[in-house]
Image (cartoon, rainbow, N blue to C red; front, side, top):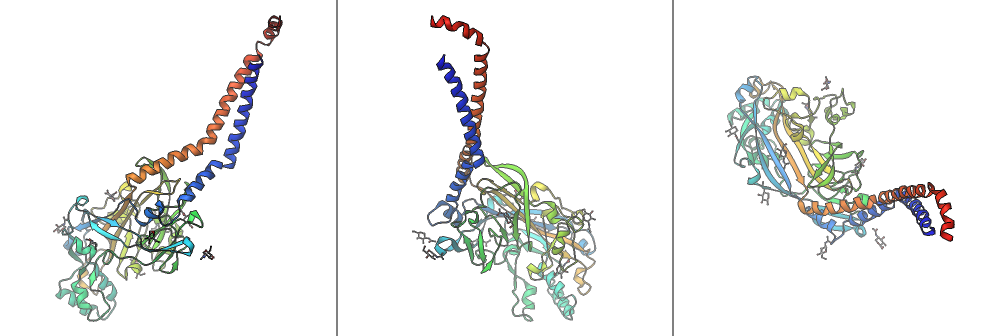
Length: 480
Ligand SMILES: *[C@@H]1O[C@H](CO)[C@@H](O)[C@H](O)[C@H]1NC(C)=O
Ligand SMILES: *[C@@H]1O[C@H](CO)[C@@H](O)[C@H](O)[C@H]1NC(C)=O
Ligand SMILES: *[C@@H]1O[C@H](CO)[C@@H](O)[C@H](O)[C@H]1NC(C)=O
Ligand SMILES: *[C@@H]1O[C@H](CO)[C@@H](O)[C@H](O)[C@H]1NC(C)=O
Ligand SMILES: *[C@@H]1O[C@H](CO)[C@@H](O)[C@H](O)[C@H]1NC(C)=O
Ligand SMILES: *[C@@H]1O[C@H](CO)[C@@H](O)[C@H](O)[C@H]1NC(C)=O
Ligand SMILES: *[C@@H]1O[C@H](CO)[C@@H](O)[C@H](O)[C@H]1NC(C)=O
Ligand SMILES: *[C@@H]1O[C@H](CO)[C@@H](O)[C@H](O)[C@H]1NC(C)=O
């Protein structure tokens, strides 16, 4: 009898202790702190650590894919018709971006490096070759026309263009348009401007070159600063966490964002392609190679016109000169070339720009920029940066080459620079995530066991109390 009642009250006591312990663990967040500490130990750049080798040579392959818009009706466009284009590509390049000339500084709290990028053509992932032909805007010619449209030199330059049969449109070899070719018009104009570079290419001089010295924090002082950029070419970089030619994210490319990302986080992406920084917000839960992640995408307000987002006034250049939703004048970043950046196929831009060109077909899944991050570790699971290069075309009276062309934003090319976590890293990450889930849930398991014991306790007590009188009657029987 005593044994039984002892069991019952013992159960009650353990139940209360478990509940107290569980609640205390939840309140003090002891396991969360433990987990944070483990992550902190791992996110530091030190010679010989895994984080360092991953940072120095990010294992997941990065691909740069180019798509061009091949113009089918140049004569009609010069007569005032709508352009009609056919998308060609992708022309895919594997992008290698190791950190080189690595030097630790300040007792290992900061590290200096350069980050050259090399592009190697991947025929198996491409449709077509670098020798394909594409007919599009002759960007050097249009730039020259824009520069001299109000100058006394417009006449001789126009004559020069006629003698070279240079017009608004030109057929290029894909490889030349990307990586550079000697431009006949620029070559002739060099006589007047000895500093002029006679080569032109959308990615001219980008292969194998680095964009200057970076100084990163190693995370030794503060793990949240892990791999964050402190300086770029001697300039302090405030909130830039990572670099990628024209493109800085305050998280890193393949290495790491700071751990424990929440759904309310605003991720800043600085892009000198876009001459501005944009941000991305949480959109949905995703799973990449079995690893859970949060998807962040730039919300449409980022690209909206002034009526919808007055904050975008600063991006109308020159001041007051707004192009409409989804477009950005990148002329100042591109040495005066009339370049306008947008999302591919004018996704999230004013419908007017889509309607102005036959062949545009914006699709969310294909044309938006996405960043998928594992929230616990802050690791990048998948990323795709998608940007389109357009040229602003209009009639220029001084240059009869422009004919009766409509005023329009002409799409030339778009790119998709993407990365997906490699299988091996994904497997490692999965182990970490599973472990973390167990650790974080320990307090709740303890509480659950407490509640279960509580239920058992109540049942036992009730069963003991109902037959109380019979127990009393039996007592003498037992003692006798
Ligand atoms: C890292 O250590 C190796 C071997 O000890 C050494 O050769 C290398 O220079 C070190 N790297 C840096 C960046 O200090
Ligand atoms: C590096 O560490 C040494 C010894 O701990 C200290 O005297 C020195 O001030 C530190 N230097 C920097 C730049 O932190
Ligand atoms: C870039 O440079 C690398 C190495 O120098 C070379 O193998 C590759 O073919 C180049 N890529 C292009 C697109 O020229
Ligand atoms: C692009 O158009 C030009 C002119 O019509 C044509 O010669 C070329 O083959 C086209 N390019 C591709 C890749 O289809
Ligand atoms: C990025 O920078 C913004 C602005 O300073 C900050 O609010 C945000 O928390 C940062 N995000 C990450 C992932 O570091
Ligand atoms: C801004 O965009 C909205 C929706 O696309 C449109 O209704 C409005 O007319 C635009 N405002 C201007 C000034 O273009
Ligand atoms: C783009 O900006 C440049 C320089 O700021 C300016 O000269 C040009 O007119 C702008 N283009 C358009 C289409 O607004
Ligand atoms: C890049 O984006 C394009 C569409 O924008 C898509 O067709 C292509 O599959 C993407 N590439 C990768 C490697 O995800």
